[in-house]
Image 1: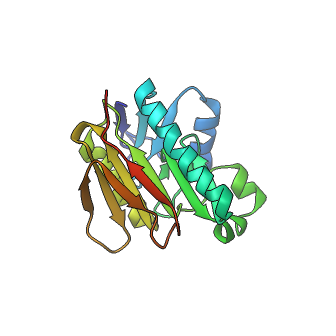
Image 2: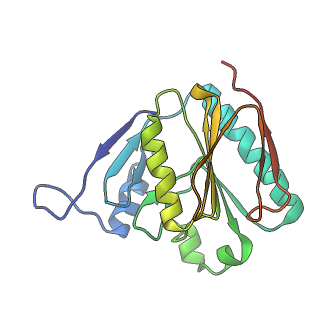
Length: 195
């Protein structure tokens, strides 16, 4: 997806949106896919193509099937916007939150953009995504408290694994991924991506 980033500052030449204003902007423009970085930049993203959308759905299904068996948390799709503790508003391609953390939110917080960092996120690089931009987003997730994150990169046939307090791990495909202590018992076999 091609992203257009607009910096927002308190400078009079720019607009600064509160959390509520950003929420209203998104609700008032449901056809736009908008995120906001931790520094306040608005990011407008285009829809993904069929291959990326299909892969994203497969990962959500795998994560959801595991979660239905374990009942350890809640799974979220790319349509879910999280109001991250570092100030960003992000929509990972797939996300998971441990059940007690989710239940600690009020009903209103759950209905709007939940003010919480997921425990686990997946991002899938589409054909038009810039890798460096996604890598910055992954670091933003970690800075917000995400414990484990996977960045799938079909163009380079690899996956990047991000863990809280550790150096990023790169793996060539095919590979077997583990949810580790964050998602106990979750395993994902990832084959090479084909066009």
